[in-house]
Length: 130
Image (cartoon, rainbow, N blue to C red; front, side):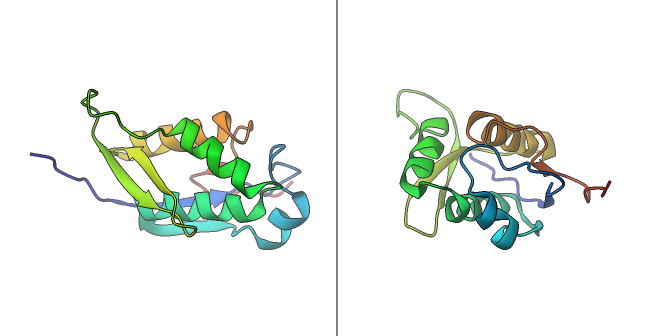
């Protein structure tokens, strides 16, 4: 029995400083990256974050490939439960099942560290201006 846990999350884009990582076009993310994702269901928020980053990337196809490398298709031999999310361009991404808020933030950390090469790009509270 697979039980899918659904809970609401809110994620903020930490827009303070030049904090977009090397793959995002600063002109695009400063003008079109939402400052808040959610509140919404955790997988919907992840989809919105991925889609927004793809739109703001220098090379969208390469960016999508990095997402697929980070979250590969689950092999039937592995007994890892996952949930599929469909991006705006039709790409299917297999996200490990999220059972609690810590799992959600672990996926956010994997995404921002593994692809964007930056810490604290996505945070759980409003960023403080300096």
